[in-house]
Image (cartoon, rainbow, N blue to C red; front, top):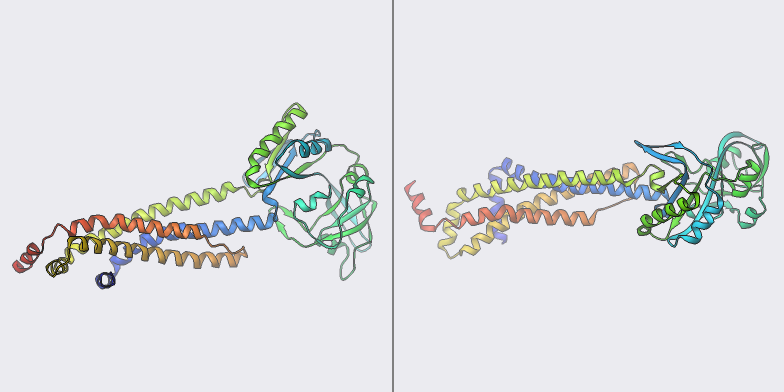
Length: 402
């Protein structure tokens, strides 16, 4: 086998351009497959990291008709029918639900002793912080007692805290005004950064009941965030929550989406990206198959004397067949390895520059190697069978006549 590979290398060196063309087809197929999966996998890891550890398990219920227009989501109608009672029933009636939190938002003027700004304040339940994977930097979050007593307490995002209290001022225990109403700061959230159209650090949270009675005087919600037990429960939970709310409201006056969709991170783009890359990869592998087939077929006529000598000294037809098949596979695997190495180098570089989590598509790499092996076998069968058609005597006679 080693001798056969050496013979193949020596032959391929004779016409390097033809060899490069044969290798490029397989290399392009492997590159398309591995590089695109490396990039899309890194993008997906980034999405999951930005959404938070539990973000992929979340469902958003929004009152009204919300539709995706390109990469943006627009609300075409709005209802005031989503109530806190609906959230309680969802928790009790839907078995796939792990927890949920109601949400009510309002844009207000927020003012401290040092600075003032306009900010959207969210009224939420204590469970909201765990659902969205928020962590506390200092102080704490509000609890059920604050909710029951409609306490005027607030938890600030990291950027909001820095804006209102510049320098080394500790905001915990300080009083700020929200829409002219004094609120006591009980906690500051750890920094998370921004994602899509939402800045997780430029925010403030108050107890839901406080928002609905103190900052506003309403009995309806702006949304509900629901967490399921696992990703496989998402489709069933979306369907069951929809049926339940239609039953409670008498009509479909809401929109249900996964949290990724609400944040504009639907998997449709990544799926399309992956499908297109696979189509390109299979086309490239097909071209590579034809390239290797051409190289191996030409090699038969250029290596007739070699075939004759081997047969004369005792090589069987089986040996010649295996030799050509092995050479075809080696050529194909070499192209695949070149493509995989190039893809990983470029993919990792892109991930480092974009500051994505490192992702290596191990399964795709094995798939690429498997496809290249199949390509090598497919491209090598015809030349291997063709090589058996030449008898040693006929070959030697042909050379004697020349």
